[in-house]
Amino acid sequence: MWGFTGILGKLIHLDAFIIVWYRVGIAFIALGVGMLFLKKSFRVKNKTELIKISAVGVLVGLHWLTFYKSIQLSTASFGVLCLSTTAIHVSWIEPLVMKRRASWLEVVFGLIVVLGVYIVSSDFNLNEYKALVYGLCSAVFAALFAVFNTKLAETNTPAQISLYEMCSASVFISIVLLAQGRIDASVFKMAVSDFWWLLFLGILCTSFAFLAMVNIMKVLGAFSVSLSINLEPIYTLVLAIFILNENEVLGFNFYLGSAVILLVVLANTIVKSIKGGEDSAAKLRQP
Image (cartoon, rainbow, N blue to C red; front, side, top):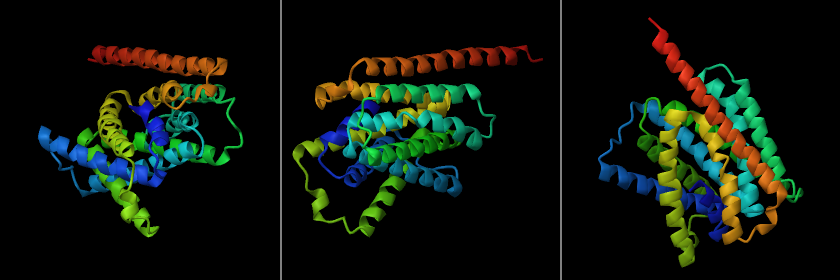
């Protein structure tokens, strides 16, 4: 699902703001209907929690806006490669928010991921500075909402977090579009293919994927999930071959960079498994 989001940024022939506006709006409705059907509670712990979730929703909106802007200025492949730097931002943001000691191993893993992205993207056009800036900003916003969602998941259900974040993102983008005078009859004019792609993006690639991500973060933590999401460039690059014909990005550098990213994800999984086993053994030894 994550791999498809970049592809859809090219397949949907609408402005980045309009794409994200539809995306969060459709996701909000889909999540609401799903929670009603599954009889999930809409009530959060208190107003303070609701404000926190809503604030993170704005970060989600900013992340997607900058992400699609980067893609539209360059290619789907370039946009997701920039997004792969998310893990390096999480490595310094998470200790501050979660109030734990920074892990130098996570910093090293994050830097290796950046190296892998650099290798994969070494043949890209270096003149795409705007796309690079938007893409890196998107990674920072992604790191922020990933860490904050981990914190929010301690006291709120994934469904509640996802629902109210989509709601606040929708309200935020609507306010921006209204301020720009862009909400009129033209925003509802689109090709039939764009309509179906938007539904696919909003329901499966957002509602389902976002809800699953929040659930997984409760178990693995923001850093591990961010590293796993760094496989998104590989998924997107492969999909781009068949759907967007972005074959020129593939070659020796692609396979080398992809191998680096895969090895980091594998190493992180092994290290976390060993550490988890040691922690469990230590607890059992306690009197």
